Each structure stands twice: as structure tokens, then as C-alpha cells.
Amino acid sequence: MTVPAATTEGSCGPRREATWQAFLQSQSESLRAAGLWRTIEPLESAPGPTVRIAGQELLLLCSNNYLGLATDRRLIAAATAAAQQLGVGSGASRLLGGTLALHEELERRLAALKGCEDCVLFGSGYLANVGTLAALLQPGDTVVSDRLNHASIIDGCRLSGAQVCVYPHRDVAAAAELVAQASGRVLIVTDSVFSMDGDGAPLQELHQLATRSGALLMVDEAHATGVLGNGLVAHCGLHGQIPVVMGTCSKALGSVGGFIAGSKLLCGYLRQRARTFFFDTALPPPTVAATLAALDVIALEPERGQRARDLAQRLYLGLRELGFAVHAPIAAIVPVIFGESQPALAAAAQLRAAGILAPAIRPPTVPAGTARIRLCTMATHTDADIAHVLHSFAQLPSNFRLPPPR
Ligand SMILES: Cc1ncc(COP(=O)(O)O)c(C=O)c1O
Image (cartoon, rainbow, N blue to C red):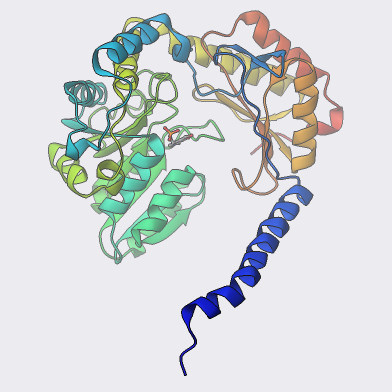
């Protein structure tokens, strides 16, 4: 005899719901117990070099708005004019009526910035990485990926169904071995400036490896574009030579959006096959106009990137002198390693009391045992701001100072 569906649902509904409640509760409790519960605090001001949170003025040391462009009057004017002329939303995906001349202009400008034939815009850098990796790779292919690549790269690799081979951070010899053993088509993927470690990928060696082995090289320039001129690719003398260059408009460019620059063939294919491109609403006109204005500013004022880098270098040298385990920055990211989550949280709380916003970064964002405070400099920080950060670190207990990283 068949049991009517209503009866089955009626009897197991409450039990199923209780299972979900228990799952959510136990997961939340274990995150709290491990010191991994994150709190979200809204800013009460624009994201300038100082911000207000819960009525307190804080020096912002954790923003990717490296050049201070998110609050630049030229970007705001461009966004305002675009909103008045074209509205605040694009209303549709790029393929179904959402494309404006402005999107295509930005794609041309970004392609030129990266020395490539073409460029495809996505809603964010995350979407650019996930959509591109999933479109390029198929089951049977191999992707060779640096261990410290950004989560969006990891997620794109997983989604693609390709075999994922991870090499130790920056270890080109290990990457070469993985490439030699790989089957199918091979793609090598790396951040250019690593988001949590602030160091640079060995791009010349990876380029040589890709060239001699026939692998496709994809480089994520999220933290380099605008801070290191056009990016680390150009900085390493490889301008226009990397087949897949990813970038984001949401960090140094002060706006939002992601992109892939490459050949016309590559970008044409991605417009057909990258699901995060065509199943996602096109970027809104004010955002695109702001990014175009940002490209003008970085061309006119390259000293902004230099200033953010100089301040990062000053922080690094000062913190090293104080005995902290600090990584040398190639761009504007200076990680200070505390090891376990608890000392990192305690240090962040003490810095907060001194008027500095620099939260602890904990697993799973970084590997276990490497909890840290990731300091990011902005071109708009003053010399006095950096001196205050160094002074505040000097007040932290001496047992927070670990041996320097290798
Ligand atoms: C290396 C790297 N790639 C990609 C992204 C994603 O970019 P977006 O914030 O524009 O989604 C980030 C963001 O933090 C990143 O650090």
C-alpha cells in the first residue's frame, strides 16, 4: 500500500527540522569554541584612511582600497554622472540586454592596461576566477595550483571537475614535477601578489615552465593592479605575455567588478561558456563609470601606488625591528604572524583599544597555526598614522613576537 505523501511529510517534517537546528547549533558552537567565530561590524563612515565604528574613530589598516580611490571625488563624480544618465542598475545579464557601451569601453581599457587583445568583465573578482576556471577546465584536465592561492581560485578548480594538484607555496620545482606527471590539458594558476602573505609569485619561472610544457598560465593580479603599476606581470617584464590575466576593480581601483584579460579567442570563448558571466546581472553603470575614472587616476598619479608600497615597507622594517614575525611585502600587504588564533585576537583587541582597526585573520582563511594580523597600507595614510601603528605594536606583550618566518 502506498503511503500518501502528505502523511509522510507531516510525520518527518518536525524531525528533519530539528536535525537542521541541531546541525546549525553544533557547528556554531564549535566555531566559537575554536575562537573562529567572526563578528561583522558596520562602518558608520566612508572607507577612508580612518573610519567610525560604534562611534569610535579608528585608523583603517585592513582595507584593500590601497590607493584611497573608493572615496576619490573624481570617481564619485563619474559614478554620479553615470547614475543620472543611465540609472543605478543594469537590469539584465550582459547577453540579454544588460550591456552598455560603457561596459565595452571598460573592457577595452582593461585589455590595454594588461597589454592584451581583449577583456571580459565579471560582477566581481570571485566570479571571474570561478567562472573562468570552470569554463576552461574539464574532467580529465589537470590544474596545478599554488597552496596559498585565493579561495576563488580553489573554488573554481573544484567546480571544474579537473584533477587539482597543489604545489607548496612558490615552489616552481614542485610545480614542474606535477606538470610533468599531469594528464590531459594542463593549466597552472597562481596569485601574483598573495592576498594573505603579501609576497609575489615567481612569475618568470612559472612562465618558462608553462612555455616549455605547453601548459596554460593564469595569473590573478587582484592585489597588484594599480599598486605595482599595471601589475606584477608587467613588473616582471611579462606584459602581454601571460595568456590568462585576472584582475579585480574592487581593490586598488576603488570600485567593484572582476575581469579576465587575454586573447580575443579566450575572451570570446568565456563570453559563451563562463556561467558566472552570462547568468549574472551586468555591473551597474555608476560602478563601471567609477572604474573608468580610476584607470584615468592611476595613469595620472602613479605615485599613489608607490606611496602605498613605501608605507608597507616602512611598517615591515619597523615591525621586524620590534621582533615581530612579519613577511616582507612586495605590494601593500604586511602580514604579522601570531600562530594560534587567541594571541592574534588578543593583539587585534589591544590595537583596537589604541584606535587601530586591524582584525585577526584565522583559519580557514589562512592555514592552521598561522593566524595573523594582515596590515594593508593606503596611499592616503599619513606618516603619523604609520608611526602610531608601530608605536601600538611596540606596546604588545613580548610573547606575541614569534621567530621570523623562513
Ligand atoms: C587574490 C584574490 N583574487 C580574487 C579575489 C576576489 O576579488 P573580489 O573581491 O573582486 O571578488 C580576491 C579578494 O579578496 C583576492 O584576494
